[in-house]
Image (cartoon, rainbow, N blue to C red; front, side, top):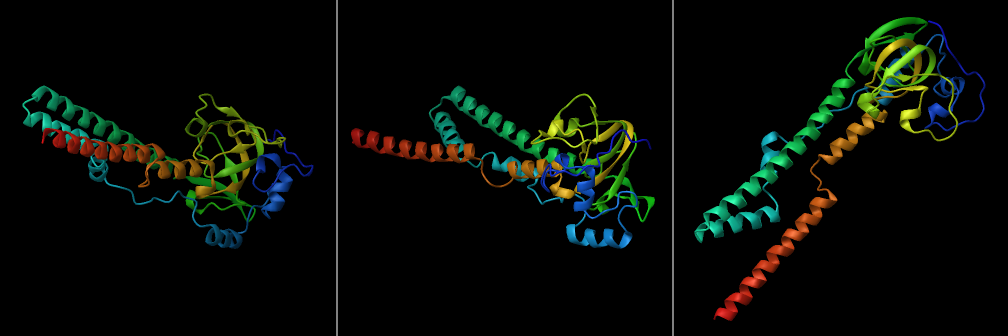
Length: 277
């Protein structure tokens, strides 16, 4: 494999959390790995026990039925349903039907939104399930992606799915499709040279990210993050939290508004009843 560029100087250009701002020598030294030989089998096993498997853990979520039922459990919906029943009792069939349709549309929109969030998390997990070629004990081995550990030296070829977040050490015409992570439609050209200062995710040309795919060329890189510590792992965690059981700020505000409206309706009812008496 030809090497377009490998930076060997070692100025202090970043911290442990900024591998793109460090030289490849610094990254290899920090992770205690000889890039030419890779980790030993024993060290890889020790790190696997320390860091855990390289996978985005599946969390138990709500069933589709629970998600559907939850769409009707809010004070606003209670008020609308009560209004629909009152309209039906009063003989206002058109109004009653309109209220029912409004409730159903609201439930469908909420259900579809939450199901899509769940499917997005499942898709992110699928992206990380792959095999990888690594250098261990001085030779190349093909292993399951879940066994990748920080410090592993990963070999990338055309068509490969990147198994973890890598600080690239070599690039031979390497271009990677990062659309699943950044939304960039064109494959991104990669270069191992260290970058100066804070760099947005989409501009980290010396990094390869878990779940993206090699479009053209080949390269090598040192694993700097696995599992939920990867960029796509963080995205998965955010999506999980957004679709979890905790209410969003908007949902909490709507809930408070619904309770206030219920109180106002009861108060108006008492006032009207009193005036009638």
